Length: 139
Image (cartoon, rainbow, N blue to C red; front, side, top):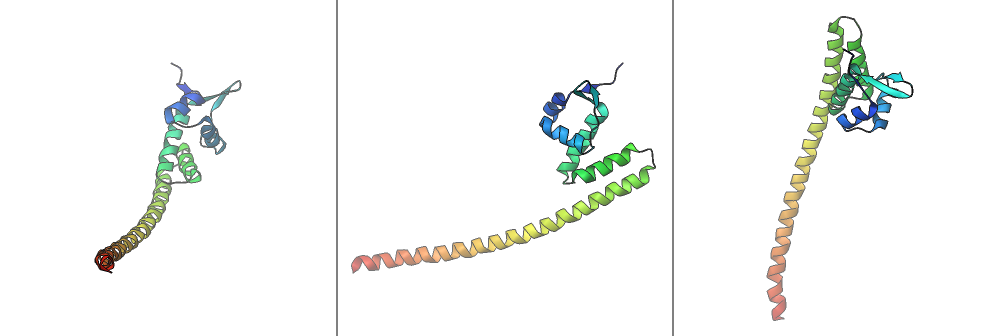
């Protein structure tokens, strides 16, 4: 039974990517299709690497980080260093996200405080306008 293969168009459609994006991943060394004449032929391994690359992107990892991790799994070495590298990259990224979240929460609190003050100032101004209008009408 021959191994399953995919064309660039099939992968692009399946993953909702452009063929240009897939060629870019190939240029980055994330995918290594075979050639059948001028046509690229992607293996099940390439498809799996594309899946993992897109997952890494969703996690916020750079393509270089994704490649480093994927390449480690391709090597026959012990899995301990591979997992340590993966966990190190994830830990660093998590710390960055947590710092961004802290900053966003502080910004949100500041926005909420300005909104609260703005609403109070608006309410006072509206009340002053309503009180001033009847007096102007008598004049």
